[in-house]
Length: 315
Ligand code: CP
Image 1 (tube, rainbow, N blue to C red):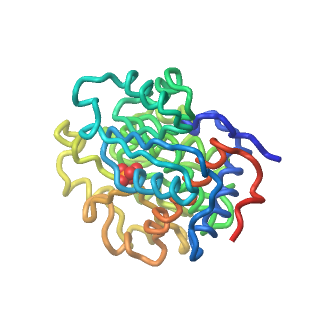
Image 2: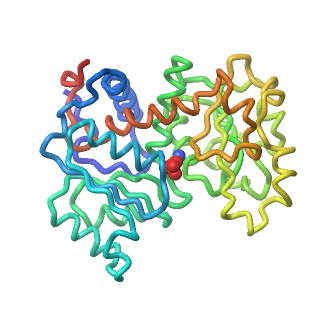
Image 3: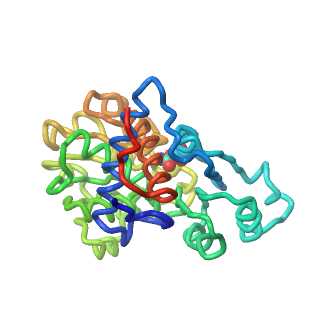
């Protein structure tokens, strides 16, 4: 029986053993059969309770964690700052202690502050799952990206994966780099110099500032959202210039391999970092990524809360 993740928080992909990443991807494949079936309920987490504590906006991650927990028959509380005693001044720590006192088994946390889930892990007994913390990590997004690459390409080892855009502010990029390296991919980063610091090279990636050069022979192109909320800071002169130099469209993708896979974690700025002809192309798996997010999060909740083998995951 494999119990590699049982009782462990998932705070990031940095330092997560390759076997455990493979275990999550394998379990997610079984969970996807459940999601694709007529009866999506599998009572593996019956009697368990999960809190989704999203202190920053989210559509995909929050929705898919809620569905994942409900499909596995856990009790679920959804928690947002405006509907909680945080607005009355209760601290993050006291909020965690309060939720812990209710006897929950896992707390899924999204927070604008880097390190908030790790801090929560020191305060609270339940398993903590990082659903995105500032510019630090977004492990389940990277896991669903890896899952999608594996599903389409059949392997990750040796793939040239190009991550495009606002690398410096991207938790998705960081978690992807850790996971992709663990599974043997060749990782390239490209974007404006103001959004791709040379220090990133220390992560063992290849840096580019020219998009066409980076796309040459790419197997996978993962396009990051331009975080418009940060653009007042002036990381590039105009959206028009960014689109001209780094926007992904079908013409640009002729530099990549013919069967290149297009990914985007969402939400997309269509017409800025990606054009509709690439976003809705048959070689884009952007909607499938969202679907895979449910099965990957089912796998993460199951493996961290219960552990065990995959014999109970049948459809
Ligand atoms: N990819 C992602 O984290 O999207 P949401 O912000 O909608 O959860």
